[in-house]
Every structure is written in structure tokens, then in C-alpha cells.
Image (cartoon, rainbow, N blue to C red; front, side):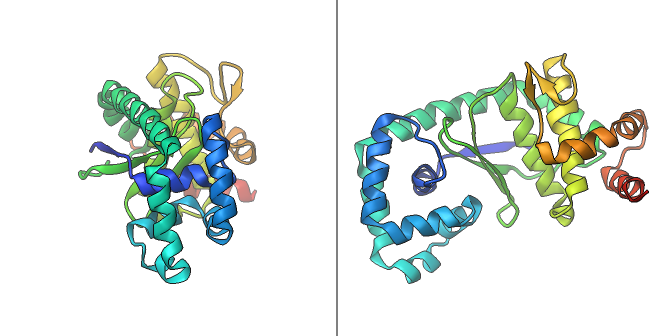
Length: 252
């Protein structure tokens, strides 16, 4: 298994134009405000739809063109030719190179440790990772495309590798996609155990004084932590079976 890192320019533009995202640099704020005034309905649509759906639509753009006509093509054409986008793309290219370097440094350890933690067989095919600007926030598994969208500040050492693996586990546990328990297990496996093994040190739920994991999942994770530590000592690991055990425990 490997990750293949790609910058999809229309998606990079759309992600950075989303009104819910912060501003990566001052020039982008001015450009973003102008686009919002010129294409208010289209920008609202992009903000109201989850970004992985927008990416899917931009790779298969008929639906957007049907709904908004030439506005879609005009927005993309104008955006991709703007000086602010040139800066956005340059900075994203630099970040993409950083992400690829970090992955290459960590790949061998991940390919050894992630199956050891989860009991899962990693896919033989490459997983495409669509990279967006690092000053913005992006991290989602594209289950329909067998791919990942990623872009985020590097909050701590090997942050990117840990969360690429987090999203990978969402792909590998697609049948449990709506399971809060499985999401908590993924956080125990990647956000915590894999992070500590990658960095050679650390503690659960905390990295450099920062909380690790979603607040709404921490209650579950702390409740099952002793069972998780017992699970890690088991020679035959299977996170699907562990999920069943946890669900049974939580019913008590």
C-alpha cells in the first residue's frame, strides 16, 4: 500500500473559497469576498455541502453545471487564473512536498505497526490523497472514491501521518462508517497508539498539552481504555471483534 499525493486545482480552489474556512493569507480574503458577492448562490451551495461531496462533483461536474450553468465554469476559470490562487497553489505545492517526505520517512513503520495494532490487512492498491492548503482544515475519507482529502496545520510531530492513517481506517471500516464506537476505536488505534509508536514517546489523549481526539468520543475511549490495553496484548487482533465486545460492555 502507498499514498499517492495529488493537488486537484478546482478542488483546491473550492475548498479555500468555502466560507467556513479561515483565511490562509490576506490577499485571499479580498478575493474570497469578491467571489462571494458575484456568485452568492453557488458559494452558498459549496459551503452547505460537505467538501468530499464537492470534490466528487468537481471530478464529475455535470450536476453542478446543470444546477448553476455557466457560473460554475466562470468561477473556476476566474479563480484558477487569479494571482491569489497562484499563491495558494504555490504554498500548497510546498506543503504537498512536505507531506510526501513525512510519509516516506514513516511508511515502513506504519506498514508494520498499523496492521499489528488493528489486525487489518492494508489494501494492495494506492490510496489517492487530495492535498489542500495547510492553513485550512481538511481531513475526510472519500469512501466512494477510495481516497482521502487532507490539509491541516502540523499541530505536533508526525501529525499528518497519524491522521492520514486515521482516514485510511475509515475507508477500511466502511461498513461501520456510522458507528461512534468504531470511530472511538480508530482514535485509540491511530491518534493515540500509532502516534506514540511513531514518535517513540507520548501519552494517551494528550500531546504537548493539546487534547488528542474528538471531545465527544473521549468519554467512550476512557471508559474502554483498560479493555483496549488488554486487546493490544492479544496475539490475534481484530478491531471488528473488539467493536462487538465494546458495544456489549457499553450496554451494561
